[in-house]
Image (cartoon, rainbow, N blue to C red; front, side, top):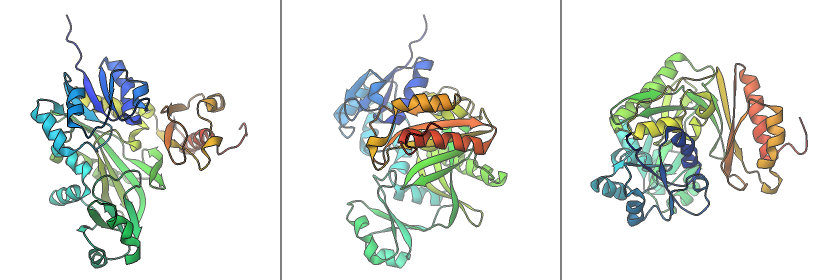
Length: 382
């Protein structure tokens, strides 16, 4: 008789957990979900679920009862709760000792400095006077709780600093980096130390939200690509990360690489891998947290372009599922991933992947499809 597959608990009901469900089903891995509300994205595809607040330790214990491993689609579970789960015998992956570096930017910056990892100049600040001493212009970030551009302020004078210090969180000041573009280096790492590095990608942001990803990053010098992957692998090993680690980077105008942010979960800049890599980031995250051999991160095509579908200013003009006839007929090679969410202004509701040998063609196809679903193209048929 074969060994039963271990149940994996996933905390968070967003689209990242939703996208773990498909590779989990293919591998025969049962998932149990803690969702923040009924009917959220992941709850639509993971039937074994509880609904409630991830800040409740009792609920975390209930959802992980009988599970081999617990993992996450966000970094917001209180660190002390993760330590409590570990003390109760649950394998928490990534563990709290690693995850705190994605939860707290102050902790992250201090540790990366110890490791000699290149980062923007930074300092913890507690007053406007501290920011003035640090120097304008600069970027202020809450050390905890920020995401998708939230908790980030570009400040050029003392008058700009009020919102940051009213946030109720500790504040980190960082230099305003003169960068050519943003890159992302994604790696998977298992508890036994096996690691796999995906091609370094270029990402474009709009209003603090990832808009577009090109894999691999065009015209990236091989030495810089290797440096970015080496940095990501070194961070994953030094912090004892289990699962996917995304290292968001700046490529500066003078040819350097600087670490901007860390995420220890599947990441928007890795969505291209669903269709463009031999093994997607979602499958490799599951393999890693269960200490299974990792799959190849090699690309399937010369280029893959991912474009997010975001709700426009007037969400009523968008077309999601009713956009399929046009988008799929126009491009039979297009891959569409919708999250089961209603259109709202600025909300991520899905993404499209286009792959092939011609980058300009991939860009046009992906951008057209995303614009069509969003409703930007009116009633045109081409």
